[in-house]
Structure formats: structure tokens, C-alpha cells
Amino acid sequence: MKLFNPTSIMEFALLLLIVIPLIFLFVKHFVFVSRHLPPGPNLFQVSGYLHQLVYKPHIAFNKLAKIHGPLFSFSLGHQLVVVASSPDIAKEFCRTNDRMFSGRHLSYVYHNLPGANSSSILLSPKCDELWKMQRSTAQTSIFSSKAMESHDWKTKVKVMEMVNYLRTKEGEVVHVEEIMFAALANLISSVVTSRNLFDFEGDQAIDDYKVMMDFVNEVIEKAITLSLVDFLPILKGIDFWSKRKAMDINRRIKLIWGQIIDERRSKGRDNPNNSTQDFLETVLAGGALSEDQIGNALMELLIAATDSTTSATVWLMVEINRNQEILSKVREEIAQTVEEDGLNESLLSQCQYFQACIKETLRLHVPAPLLVPHRAIETCKVNNYIIPKDSMVVVNAWAIARDPNYWEDATIFKPERFLDSKISHRGTHLEYLPFGTGLRMCPGSTVAFKDIQMLVGSLLHYFDWSLPNGEDMTTIDMNEKYVTTLKKEKPLLLIPKSREHYIVE
Image 1 (cartoon, rainbow, N blue to C red):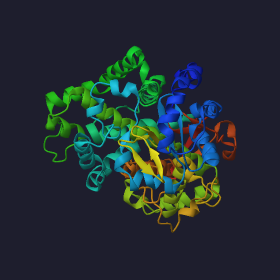
Image 2 (cartoon, rainbow, N blue to C red; image 1 turned 60 degrees about the vertical axis):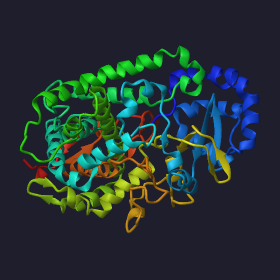
Image 3 (cartoon, one colour; image 1 turned 45 degrees about the vertical axis):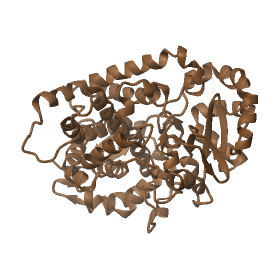
């Protein structure tokens, strides 16, 4: 996720970093000096990193960690930010003292969103009973092994819809990120509501999922990204923009999900004889959530299923296609899993080299470099330092995944490092945290991993890919940009060509 809103922070940079903090400077010194806060940069040192803190915070934090150590802190206005940059320190926050740091640090916009605080599955401010209930519902209907197995056929159908659409675009330039987003959006929507969000056919299809993708990015930008009022609570009394943004998000969520919710309420399920309930039916049957709360939960699931996973699929396509030797190995493995009706997801999971490529992509291109910020729900001691209540705690998963102390040739794409390795994507090893770990680990990590392997496996198996103008794949631009996740700076534009031998009707 993106920590800081560029517009608000850059506009009020002097106000935030110089004028107002001076008022608190001496008070903070006398209040906190006895608390033994973790070391870190002072006000003026932080201002020197302002541009990177806004646009590339994972890199700025990594540089500061090299100066101040793997556990450091600094203040932005009224807010204390604590950063963990090593597996040992991450363990303190996400394992040893997991409960104490299980809160979420969310924007004031999010707190103004009707029903958000009482309907969140992933972003709930605290791990209370309502959060446990919502999480349990999602686990049963979406994330459990039984649920995933029951949805395998839906995954296959949605992936083949994407494949068939791409066959109509043979020889044309396609925007890979947009195609991945649309496929993933349909996957999660079919699982949670038994409905598609998009139709891959028709002249309007591309425009529809472009609009949806832009809105997903906008929701993350407005509802999760921190702005000036989050660092200076004194401004809450005159903060009208946060409420306005929240109302705009609420209105657009209703446009997306309102009709689907109303239809389900009035008509029930299309197939009443099916004993498997989807997520929407389960929450409606419970009767405890309002339309706003249900809409928020559905939107949150859509964002979780598309944002970081889309980024991961794009980077995986880049890394594999840039190296013909790797591409050949992956295709040879995948070809052995094909059945008469197409790729088999369970057999794909046995493709060790392909699995290693996915893991390596999630290491080198961590989708959410700083995960989602934690919040200290109580004052706690970590490594003999005091972490005050309500501190924002950030785990720099990007820096940890590139630390040469734990990874040989840390900046090079080497899938072989994961062959015969016990390191998994489930947060069991603290040097590898693509989905986080502990209480607030992403509950959909296994679903995401399976979706990545099915989508990219299909793209590689059914199509050959080339760059426009016949450019060599090794020339693909590898620069990154930190938006909502760590994306390619330039969009991945490729031309598909069907591998005729592998066409499945």
C-alpha cells in the first residue's frame, strides 16, 4: 500500500515538517526522552528524504536503516513512525508481540467511510470479535482448502474466458496489466457473488475494466493513503475533505455492488439446490450487516484479489519472458500438466521450477513493499526500546527480501534458490514476507498464489509473446514505480500469438 499522499504532503511540506513540529519539539523531547524510543533521524534529516518518502518510501527506509539500524523511528507531525528492516525485528512485531501490534494504521478517510470500521476483513483497525466473525466467514467461503477446491472449476472457466479473449487479439498489442486485472476481478467476483464483473467480449469491455481498475487504485489512494490530517490530528476540526472523499467512495461502491446485493436479497440464489454458499449469500443470511457494510467488504475483497496479484503476474511475465532458458523450462513443466479440458490447477502446483519462479518474483518484486502498516494498541517494549501506543509500525519487506545477509545475489532473478527450499509464501520464514505474517497476514495468500500460477501458466502455455516492433524481450524496461503496489513504471505491452498445438476449445 502507499503510505503517503503526494499532493497533500508536498503542498504542506513546510507546514508539516518545519512550522507545526517546532511547537511540539521541546514537549516531545522531554516526554519521550525517558521512554527510550528507537534511534532515528531528526526533523531536518527527515526533510532531506521527503521526496523519496512520498514516491519510494521502501528505498528511503532502507537507506535510513543503514544509518540508524534495523529498528529506527522518526516523527511526522504528531505521528511516530517505527520501521523494522530485518527478520529479527520483524519477528518482534509480527510474532513475539503480535497481539500488541495487531492494530491497523488507517487514514482518516477510511474511518469516515460508512460502516468500514465494522465490516472489514483485512483492514479492521483492531482484531475484535466482529473482525474474527468476518474473517471466519471469508475463511469458510473463500480461503479454506475446501472452498478453494470447490472453486477450482470457476478458476478454470474464468482463465479460459481470458485465453479465448486473447485469441481474438492475436497480432495486436495488449496491455497485460489490464487483462490480468479483469481476469482477477471476474475470478473474485464469481467466487464471492457468483457473478462476473466484466464481459470480456464487446467493444465496451476494455473501457469497463479500465474504469474499474482506476477506481480500485483511487479507493486505495483515498481510503488507505495517509494525508496531512493523519499526521496533524489538530486539523480534524476543519477537515472537510476527508469526509467528502469518503462519501464519494461510498457512492461509487454502491454503484458497483448495490444492484448485485439488491438482486440477491430479492431473488435469492440463481441455483437454490446448490449446497455451497458464496460469501454474499452467507453474509446476507446472517442479517447482521447493512448494505454499506456488505459493499465495503466486497470492495475490500476485490482490491485484495486484484491489486497486488495483478502486479505480481505482470512481473512474473516479465522475468520469465526475458530469459528464454527459463521460459523453455517452465513451458516444458507446464505441458506435462495439460489434460483434455486444459490446464489442471492441482498438477500445476507440482511444477517445482514454475513454483520457484513465482516465489522468486514475489521476493524480488514484493507486491506491497511495506505490507500494510500496523498500529501499536498498547505501549510495548521491543529490543529494550519503548514503542508508544498508537505508533505506526512499518515492516520493510522489500528491504528484507533483498538483504545480502540472507540472500545470495539478492538483486538477481534466480528461481533456482527456491528449488529444494523449505521457504514458503505463507510467512513461516521471516526473511521472506510477500504476504506478511502473524495475525494480520493476508488470509488470501494461498488463493493469490494459485491464481498467479493459473493465469501466468495459461499465458505461457497457450501463447507466444513478443514486444511491439519486434524488439528483443531483454530490452523490457525494468524500472519500478510505487503507486498502490510496486508496479512497472512503464506498462507491459505485448503481442500474443496462439501456439496452435495447444488450442483447447
